[in-house]
Length: 196
Image (cartoon, rainbow, N blue to C red; front, side, top):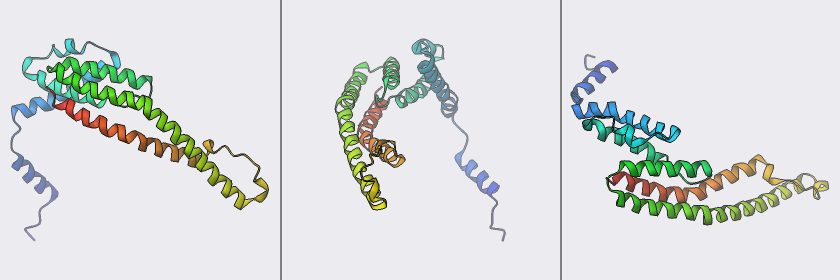
């Protein structure tokens, strides 16, 4: 019975195995969140990111930058609306200001812009075709169901677009169409993280 340990004893043993945190780890824990807050402020209030970053001492600037870059990269998304387009532009401008390899960043940005353009042109057409196809398919299913229920309602026109089932199916289909773009965008975001 003496071999059974409490959860507290097990936790203490694990902490002892970890050892003392290094100075670098402590700096990272302290300043990466500050960089995240700075990037959030930049996106929401449009402050001068470079000027704000320059207020930090040189030895912690890389951690603040790291946190800011993470938030800015996460804020790049598919341009579904004007707000997303503005947010993308601002996040991309902020990242370019933080990165030293401007050419590398611009190379990745050109690929991201191609995805955005394709999404806005081809993707919208795909969505329209898929929407109309789903609408027709749903209309047929609803008419068949109504015909089975009540023969007298065959002439009644039902607006399938207002049905909750149609809306659910459309959201699922739209998400599926967007996922191909999101996958490509995520690949380029990983490339952005690797650019110095």
